[in-house]
Amino acid sequence: MFTSWKAKIPFYMTKGLGFLLLGICLLHLIVTDTYKLYIAARYEYILLASSIVMILWGLISWYIAPERKYRHDWTGLPILLIPLVLFSFPPLLMTPSVDANQINALQNRSGEDSFDFSNDEVSNIVKVATESRDDSIGIDESKKRIFLTSDNFYKTLIRLSTKVNDYTGYKVYYTGYVLRDDKTLQANEFTLSRMVMACCIADMAPMGLTMHYKTGDELPAGSWYTIEGTVKTRQFYGRTQPYIEVSKIRTAEPILGYVYP
Image 1: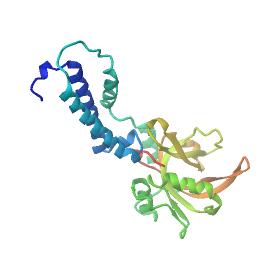
Image 2: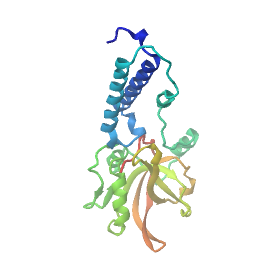
Image 3: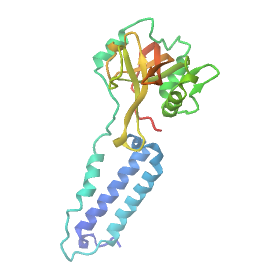
Image 4: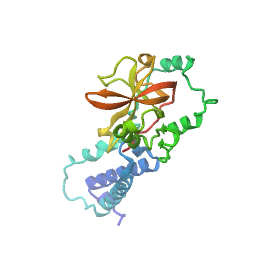
């Protein structure tokens, strides 16, 4: 079975090695949970099945490789080499960042609108909003509060946008980064966004709510903040649009990973 490696055609041996390495790379992404930087979490089992198929395919290619009897065209191997080369680089994080000096300057600013996590009555909620993986936290109708986490971000924003009149006046707590790509933004407005991945890294797009803050124009694009605000509405081309009037704000650590529908 594996006794005559030297007699095998190098093409089949190399191809088998390529499939084996590719399967191991896919398995490594699953074990380390870094596959979520490339595809949505719902495809984990498909990726696992693919990695197993690749590994088995590689081993079978070694086993059935014929002996040296003729030359073989090697032009098909780059198809395997391309993903292997790409996987050799660190994962590409599609989360924005700003200059460290800007962050330090903002963190040193003190004011009546900044959070104090040690004393603020919503300190636990704010921490949940930036770290929780529990999708049971969302809209609390009894206390008229909305808590956005990585797990409930998409569905909560969709619900808020479609039933905005039901939630006008609610308090909102969440973390995101400053985005100014929306051409309809007015003075001291910005979008507090997260990156949404529906399928894979190729279809990612930012999603968030419009914020109004008295010094909003001073906040650097790409910087991360945790906010407390109130849901308000305005008319936009005949349609009621929600926006958040920010009452408290502070710098936050970037949240790695993405939001999934």
